Image (cartoon, rainbow, N blue to C red; front, side, top):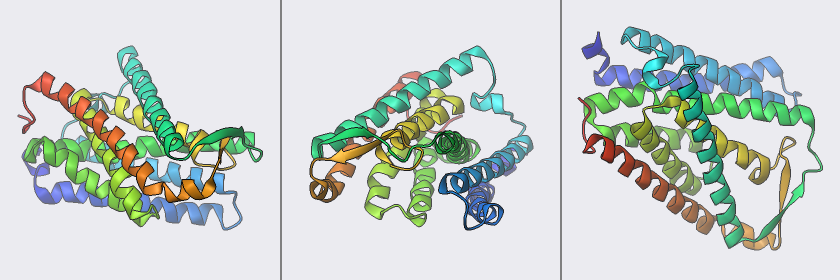
Length: 272
């Protein structure tokens, strides 16, 4: 069975099913919540549906390959929880760096969000947890490992990144932001997975990054703060510069993770 699941079509099928979970989750959430549901509830339901689908698809593929979640660094053990905690702190640090980048190009202050509600905040946090687990499981788990085994570490990082970017652009992210910020963040997550072989670490890193963004940079009813720009026009015009600077920060972190990986394996090559 192991040789069969390394064939290109089986890897492609896995990523097709992951994408189907994403779009299917969107459709099911729209049906389940209806048109008049609060945005926070609709987003939460969608993220939960996507997470359940991706986890089920991944578990099925892992079982066919004779693997379990422990093979990807996921278990309730204290060392795993410690790695997840470190990943969470790392993601918070990266997003804080992004916030500094934005301030350097377009100064702002953080004001309390007047629209904040406790239910929206709770649903936002839960949705961030669900989508972070879903995306990292789908893009940095089973499929990435099969690519690494069959085609090398570079393919294992680059191909899921291409799919990750296309999925976000199709979902409405501007293409330049998708290539710069989303693309380089995905490269970083892939390099972290290579270095740690811990899905718990990488998912927590992604979640920590998104929690900071949701709290202060992406305003919604669940955000803790609202960025108030000194010059809104300047902030809008600085978009490409901000995205490029974020990309540079992501790439620097990815290079550090890659150096960590190479120090442990001795090469950036196909896994044996």
